[in-house]
Image (cartoon, rainbow, N blue to C red; front, side, top):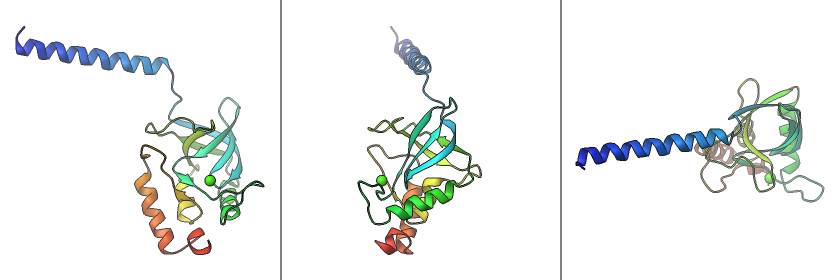
Length: 168
Ligand SMILES: [Ca+2]
């Protein structure tokens, strides 16, 4: 077989492999990258419950941030402030957009749906919480798509300082 012919065959095989893997991915029907969730209820500064388009109540962990713990079992400095700030952000927001990140798992180890959350006006809720100094950028494993933006805003919040950077 000529060298050129070998190359052509290799390309064809690669193409076939790529097409096959795409077809397999489609068959496994990953969730669409953007989903609207309604009627959010704040659990703490980085976690909410909301209803998916099928009407299923779903726990959502906001991707790329971590707020201080705020529950009857564990309360950290800044936790109550983070819960209050997220509650205020979500007041009169009947619908939220959840944006998944294909560098990240669909759910965390607790089964919570992972994604960025945005308000109807496009406000990135995780970014806003970092900006307020009430959440920190969080990377678990592979860097998430908004890591650099979140880290930049965190630097500014810490330098200001605001939120936990000022109070904790
Ligand atoms: Ca947390």
